[in-house]
Image (cartoon, rainbow, N blue to C red; front, side):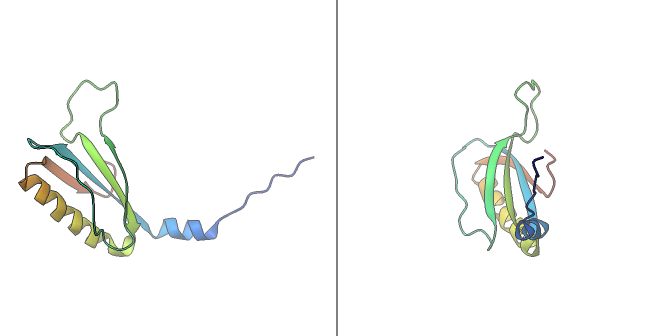
Length: 107
């Protein structure tokens, strides 16, 4: 009989427990352009971007795109303030027309 063994990674589990996620939902504005995030709060990283609509969806959603960030829970408020300031600037420049920041996926 073959034995099956599972290895539990305690370091990874501890890291996930102390990790927070932030989503930014937005719609591109009149002057869309690419941007990159610099000087994120320590320990935070950009996970990726995507569309908020399923491929077979025919209705237009208010927020069409999302960005996801992960990092330490201890600096969650700092990260949300960073993103708010960043996207307010993009909104002022008409790169995005509207945005919202959430801790859950709720476009």
